[in-house]
Amino acid sequence: MPNLFESVQLGSLVLANRVFMAPLTRTRADADGVPSEFAATYYSQRASAGLIVTEATQISPMGKGYLNTPGIHSHEQVRAWKQIVESVHKSGGRIFLQLWHVGRISHSSLLPNNVQPVAPSAIRANAHTHIATGAAQVSEPVALTASGIKETLADYQRAAANAKEAGFDGVEIHAANGYLIDQFLRTGTNQRTDKYGGVAANRVRFLTEAVEQVLEAWDSKQIGVRISPTVDFNDMSDDNPRDTFSVAVARLNGYGLGYLHVVEQAQDSKGSSEEDLALSAYLRTLWKGLYVVNGGYDGPKGEKAIRSGHADAVAYGRAFLANPDLPRRLQLSAALNEPDPTTFYGGDAAGYTSYPALS
Image (cartoon, rainbow, N blue to C red):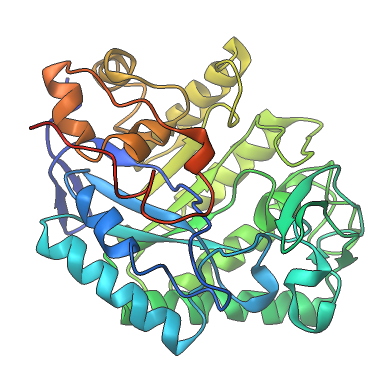
């Protein structure tokens, strides 16, 4: 079996190792969603990852859910991302952009003309976001109309095309962690009675149609999808996750995508339960492409996941946040820098580009 530090083929790309950088929201963009001037340094410092997946990036102004998160829908945003991509490529790295629409996890003050957020169904989440005045309960959403769904799917296509213009190596569709696509997938947030609601085959439809829009801009092997079958973050639930996500994986298999990225535990959780890991292991048997896992992995656990065949690659979040040279540190079993939670969201270079690499 391969190990964590062996190369892996992703479509036409040969990735240097199987230590991926997971998407990490850092809220350091400006008010117009243009990435920070420090972002090129931040990402290029981490170019030794087999693959970098960027922080979640909104596909449209309506996709925004948090203060100072970046977008990929304006010329200024595309121009800034292009400089970031060029910096990563110059450092020898590969980078995918994560396409994001938050759905109901937003606040009216963050959206154009202070409109309500959109969602599959008008169900307000028991969740908070960050706005100009600080933490706030998310706003009550309105259910997307048929025309609204069509417009949102078109936003995915435009954003995917913009990512290609910016020079990215591919894109990851964010269908996890309680955001818009996940809201369509799960029974707790989708009470629609049209072709997008009801049985799992219908609830998966928005995801597959988003994939089809992204395929207008990208080769299938340059597209990944991220899911979180058992994560309850952002007030999520599902009556039968095994059924829902089995159908989703079966449908996604038909597109020949580059990879499936599975979140096995929620942020800040104490670890993946046996149920979480069992469902991930089951989905692994269904998936025909590259299988990437995320959630609570250290070096030895990541190596075990690869050698046992549980995964083809492991995505690391906070460890990569604090250790720009994480693959080298893991390979040498070197000590890791401890992340500083007070600098996770917002701020300047401190806790962003200031973590040292090994000398």
